Length: 452
Image (cartoon, rainbow, N blue to C red; front, side, top):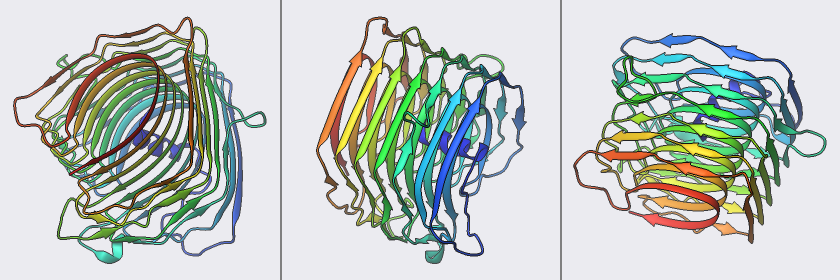
């Protein structure tokens, strides 16, 4: 499941959603327990005519079992948000979840931080802090720092677990929609159990330090996860089809995931070098992650993607099938951005997979002309990942990191099969651009990347 799709799903059960609220409050501790024990089916469809998606706009079709979510969002004005204390949340799903919805859009462009998505999920616990500004208005992109206490997602008292079948056959048909805004996204996904913490800043002119306490995430999936959104070129068009990805950090993704624990910090500028943007960064305490995809919990993805040219800095097209994933990602994108310094304490990651993983997805895209742009198809049993990337920024601070410990296992029964293919149209590739197809049992990765 991608970070943008998760942000859309947070609207299903939101404990704190603040977009320029009229008054501030004292510190608020949040405790969430969400349980679903029956079948969930969504057959809905959305069709939109010609028109643009403004910054932060979203169009989504989803079916979810159990979702616990806390979010703070500011769009074109500063936060007016309570100080958030400790956040403890769990989500348990035992009911089968099926989504067959179809989303179709007309001619237009997707603005900064806007999104279109279709997906099915079992159990989700999500915490997000999101700010989206207008690059032409300095006051709209000035954001204060946000504070969140210690975060516990899952564990012995509040489980994050899915034991049911999760199936998505929904599609996105947006061939005339250009992903021109910074951080714009299109996603199709099927997910078993997910815990996520995300801090996202798009088009800032200034942004103070965000602070999050320690993060503990424990997730488990024992259900079959299937994303069968179809083959590109069929009639009617199925899978996910969008126009060019010209926005910096824009993305199009299709995925099926058993269990995932993720922490992500993303700072994305305006794409205009004449508009300065500064982000103080995010400070996070120690991070402990455990993701387990159990025996017999198959993960299957047959979804496909068709896009136009991928010209935005750090823009990406991806298709993935993953059993278990633990990840921490820190990224800064765009030449208008400067000053970002992120801090993370000691990180301990554990990922274990015992289910079969199959990916047959296909990517068909225009040239990968953007700096640091990418196209990837992967099938992975279990992965632990810690990544830091700085793509085409004017300057960015060196991250401050604690020790990183990773333990990754793909057990017996965790066969991995990838038959995906990528076709990229003729054209020059941008600096640091990449195209990759991979199959992997178990992997532990720490990466630091700087491209300009």
